[in-house]
Length: 317
Image (cartoon, rainbow, N blue to C red; front, side, top):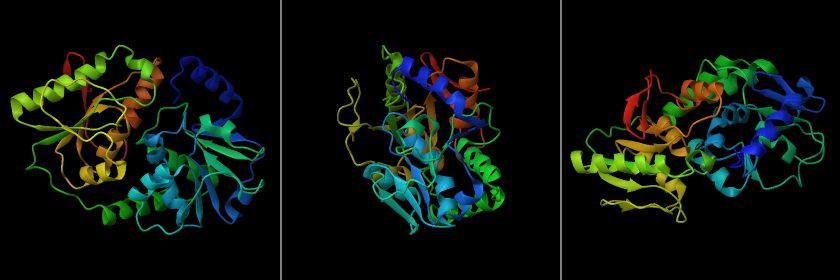
C-alpha cells in the first residue's frame, strides 16, 4: 500500500469500476478459455508502491498451483523473485522477467488490483486482492479459492498440493530450547499509521522486557537505513540479506518474534514461529476485521494471536 492516504483513497474509488466480485477485478475483455489455453501464465509483482514482500507471499499458493499446469513468468525485480524461490524451492517452471519486452499484447496478466494501471499496452488484466467481503480462511488461500472458482479449477486439489509441497520442503523444526527472539519495529507501508513512533517504541520496550525479565537475546531485523534507539543489549543484523534471515527463522533459531503486521509476521506464520503483533491500524471497521480475521493470521495459524498495544500485550478475542 502507498504511504499516501489521499492516493490510496483515489485508487480505491477508481477500482470500483473494475470490480467483478469478491477479490476479483477485471480490466479489458477477459475470456476464461483463452486464459486457460495460453501457453504460459504471466504474474506481475513488480509494483514497488502496492506490492510489498508480504503481498508477494500472498500469491505463493496460486503461483505454485499455476506452475503445476504450465510455465509461469513472474514480472518483478530480482529481490522479489529470489524471495519467492525461498518458499518455492525446486519449482523449475518459474522464470523471472523485469519488463514486458517479451510479453505479447494478447497474453493475460495477473496482479494485485492496485497495480492494474501499471500493466502497459492495454493488456487484459485480472486483479486479485482488495476483497470487499470478509474471507472465511487465511488470505493466501482465500485468493487461491476465489481464483480457482472463477476460472473453473479444483480448489481442493490446488490447496492440498500446496500443503504437501510445504510439508515436504519445510519439515517442522523444534525451537523450544532457544532463548532468542527477533524484533521487527519498522514499517515499509503505511508509515503514517505510526507517525510519532509510539507503536515502534512499544515494540522495542516489550523486547527489552523479555531481555531483562526472561534473559532473551534480542536480534534486530531491518534495513541499514532503518533508525531506532535501543537501551539494552541486542544483536544488530539490519542489512543482512533477507534470504539469510528467512533461513534463520525457518531453522528454529528464534523462539518467537515481535513487530508490526509486516513481512516478518507472515514468514513467522509460515514456519510456525510465534509472533507478537503490533497492529498498524486501519481507518475502517471492515479493514480492521479483514486484518484480524484473515491477513494477520495468514497461512497455517489455528489459534488466536496475541497482539501488542502501547500499554501491553493481549490476546485478540
